[in-house]
Length: 443
Image 1 (cartoon, rainbow, N blue to C red):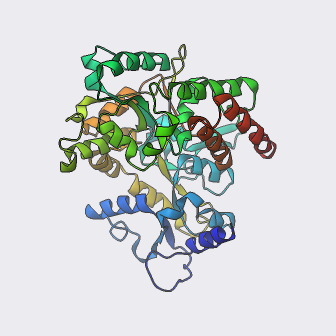
Image 2 (image 1 turned 180 degrees about the vertical axis):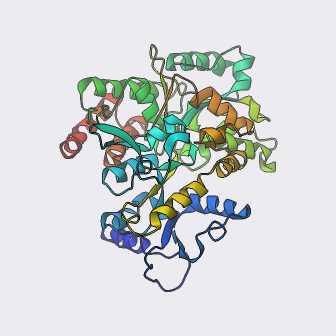
Image 3 (image 1 turned 45 degrees about the horizontal axis):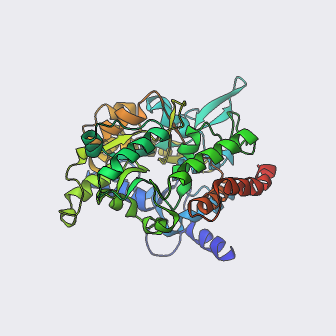
């Protein structure tokens, strides 16, 4: 832990390039640069949009953070000590909510930094937090600006479902029935359904929500330990484990699906009928199909042979859920107290989240814009199809996983015990509940 804290402390002081560390002068604008932001800024530069050309000039500093350290959240130390550096951070939705709850981030709409009106309401809500309003009461305040809508969805072999006269499943019972019909007739298929074995919790949450489960109520109170919620968690986990060995990979086969890219490779090889994955994987699968090394190895040839649908829910529950995996730009509350920095932050957010940028990312990377006006300009058929069929559907709810890292780590550990056959679903949920009682006491 000491070594981690030392590394994090060093990271918070890393300059963008080599050389001696200098104390940033007042008014300096700094932004965290990791793998994702480097791609975005490089793409902007390719369009002739550099910090210098957009008005930042010499007071723009990029703070490079190696991607290997991101799981340790290297921004925490700087924010916790009220450092004005960095000015802007690129965070996923749960991090935005966690840091905002710690009062480290600046509100955006009420301060005039960013107008939330143009965002798709569902994704704007995922980046918002209840805050006291001037007239009394509580209202949602935007705390981060997403570039795109990213969520997990159900991929399926549309060519095979059409060949057998089957519709995309709406419930887990329907998915199992489709698998039981098609698997014996398509000998090339190894599995009916595959899911992530690392970070399984990201796939589990929309399944749990689809069984009526919640970890917190509308006021933010932790309710997972209530008997009915634990029963819903057990039912959702039982549904997944119950498919293993018949429709889903058995525990002994999960290891080969643990490596990065292995899930989509298995789907492309034609090993699975259904797969849960992020919506951006449709773009990745399109690129893989065009790659010469997949010629003759892929089980299908065209992207339109891949179907997309919402993740099924429990029978009798029409609502479907997707776990928001979007990242968004957030502003350090302690930075915008310096003269002119708030205006610079507003200018930067307008630059990196403009319609032109979001449309560019949609056409070149398959990302679904978070801006309603940008969505209207997109031509990419994959983007338009996923948005229309899933994220814009009235029965689909987009929401982020709980923002507590401790809660997610505890649940992940016990869920892994169940899918790897070390415990029954009932034992895993009970063990998680026992450990989570200490979390509830400190929540």
